[in-house]
Image 1 (cartoon, protein in one colour):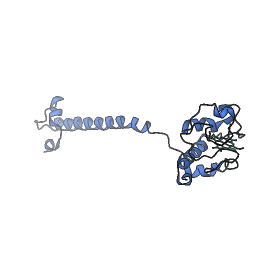
Image 2 (cartoon, rainbow, N blue to C red; image 1 turned 90 degrees about the vertical axis):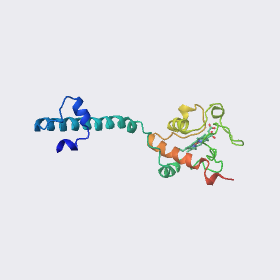
Image 3 (cartoon, rainbow, N blue to C red; image 1 turned 60 degrees about the horizontal axis):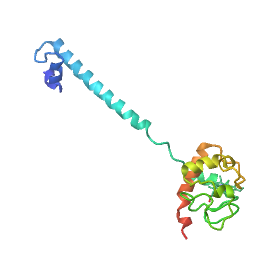
Image 4 (cartoon, protein in one colour; image 1 turned 180 degrees about the horizontal axis):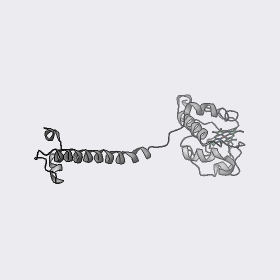
Length: 165
Ligand code: HEC
């Protein structure tokens, strides 16, 4: 009876268990073998799935939180117009120091930087160290999570509706 429920008769037979016999021990050994086989198959799935989780990208910054951090920049910057600092509309993908009509330092113009999440992260961590001679008189945003949020905000607004002219 029980032997009819076994899904892997063939496998159990390969393993040397005679499932055709009606000895109770032989039947339970076959069940045990089948269960062990199913269990190890389940383990293999878990092992294969695990690296997929490990390889998931780091969570992106929170643009909403970044809006509050941008308040620190707003004394000198605006998205859509130049102030003490150049406007941030179009910042993602812009060559550093390249806005026509803004009086950049030579250091910024010659930095060779193109602004993206990585270059912004480096610059905003320590502006004077990343671009020695910059006239951006600001100590930087030291907290990496705050920088991630701020950069998410800049990415969202760089080409956002507030920048359309
Ligand atoms: C005290 C004024 C001031 C503050 C505060 C300030 N900046 Fe600036 N920023 C400037 C000036 C001035 C420049 C131009 C620097 C140069 O030419 O060397 C600049 C340049 C930049 C640039 C390069 C832009 C380009 O077109 O190449 C970026 C990016 C930038 N600032 C981001 C920020 C962010 C983000 C904050 C807030 C965390 C911030 N700045 C805070 C004054 C400021």
